[in-house]
Image (cartoon, rainbow, N blue to C red):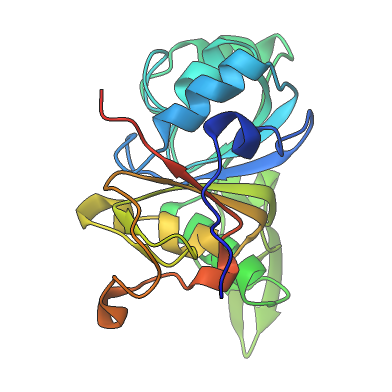
Length: 222
């Protein structure tokens, strides 16, 4: 019989350590586990490297961690509505790495599926190449090579789950949450709907399988 993976929010977040690389699912904070962010702010983890599509705002999404000074490096496809980022970068308070959105997703996928990196023509001849990519030429065409992007912890938001850890996503939750599930050493899923017993989910709808997930948190409806 599978052991329940449902734990308290405090216990789940206690696996995050100072200096960790964390993947946060979400697109403009939709599909981002805000309860986990709340708990990180309470527990005090710092010097984090945060990977997310966008920063959102100083009061919403991972932007709250940046505004609170908990993040030393931010890897994203755009900065969101975070006017403090340029100033923080100029002062040396934050390292910023920008990736085209598809490149970001594929780097995460490469980490999750054991690939040695990705090749993409996107960004050739731009600041992406100058600062973060490595140009290679294959079959007469120029590409940028990017390394896989793995995390110590992947933080997901799911719509439904069973206690074994099978996950179902809804709508915009499907953005980065699925691919990030496979690219984290420890995977936390915050679940919106009541977590059910194993076998109560329709297996045809399960998008991330139980062995991938380490901890489930029942999200409180605010």
